[in-house]
Image 1 (cartoon, rainbow, N blue to C red):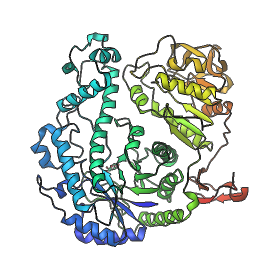
Image 2 (image 1 turned 90 degrees about the vertical axis):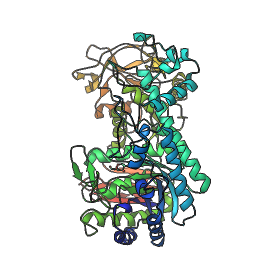
Image 3 (image 1 turned 30 degrees about the horizontal axis):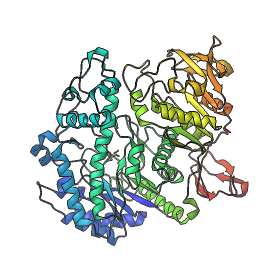
Image 4 (image 1 turned 45 degrees about the vertical axis):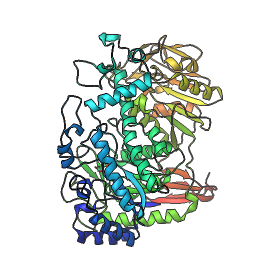
Length: 625
Ligand code: GLA
């Protein structure tokens, strides 16, 4: 069980380093990520390296029993690099070339940046491949930067040629007949750039797919280089999650030895807990049975956008244990010591500005002890039990973000979060599965607003239902193909047969409507014809709103959480209210009481087990279920 955080000793004088290691020992820290942003310190001028400080840090950490996840610093090239290679600075969609002064100012397709990245990675590998503190490589930081310059245009064209072969196929896939956009030579094709009115959605989608592959190429080049020095050591990179991130993490997960996620909830309290469970389930699903880590989180604080909100007593511990319950092999923070200056001087640290004599550092030590006890409990080291899957597809998410859709209020993430949240509050741990995955092990599969769906994936869902599976599909799923072109003949296109419905019209709502069975629909409605399905609930005019054909349910409107839970009950899932987070990992149940009230759960032997407000307990599973 790894425990630690990003350690940035370059921000501090050497005297502090010894104290750092002593405090790490006190807290039970055993892994730190070093050097993520230290390129300027490591290579103060082109080709001139200074490793003396890092030698000292690596040795000190090793003496203190702390292992190192050594980072390549390529997410923040030094100012000399930008001045030497202005063509490697990123260009925005509007055509503005950015400059240094923050981080992530590089173009991943620019040859000088690629070369410089490889050189600094090689220099680090040559220097530290045999250092006893080295336990893992951490390439880059939070891949997700984009650029629209000419280097990118050239790489994008190459990617498109590989994908489509002939220009005619691209014209067809992008429907360039619309608005006279037909391309007659590859040179005419560009990345999306500022233009007069609505851009082409298929071009935007392919650009995101391209960026994901292009960034991946930067990662795998460094990974392979590092592996050539240390074939036995894992290589990872920290995944960041957000609609601005053009990275298909599900695909990337195959390329890392250890999936690592950063997780910063958007709100305190229940929101943080729901989002934590969501992020952890997603990471575990990406990892697909392999180890994964919570690589970054904030100690003691939630950033809400407008302001930071203090985590309540014990919350830092509970949020961490949530991830462990859901399969994490370790929890780390950004960062070890809160910075004194710089852009993130107000970002939390495990050692806060107040220093180690603080409630927060006390909790950090308590968490370290709890994690080492959890590690000792070998029963807790197994698979996480999940009976339900949510379909997850980054490309469908990206496509649903296009302008020009029937409603700008469609929100893939919101739809997924709702489905996950409802399961969470009714005692279900969920996996996320790709639409092409083997779904046979799941009791039910939920499909929230999966706009894009290929024929092959639609056939996969039909097979699942055929074999007796329960499928719950929400509105505006399956309506477009993989090029974001509408499927004709009626919605929901690829899923019409399996659902037994044909939707003739889409009618986004501006006010809630009352459905039968006391349900309320918001956001969206449709004119649904039954073609083999029966109605489960109806609109005020008696037209079908929710339908069922064998195990396949269709929701043509957005229900509130209680309504969604009602549908899942109709679909045969047990949906007990579950005020305590209960997750089974291996032969252990993790029970986490995030609330201010005591709760009683079925403990070992089935007998009652009381959880005090805020309490975390682990107990053997065999006897509790
Ligand atoms: C990300 C980055 C860190 C830091 C934190 C702050 O996760 O990887 O370097 O900026 O955000 O929230």
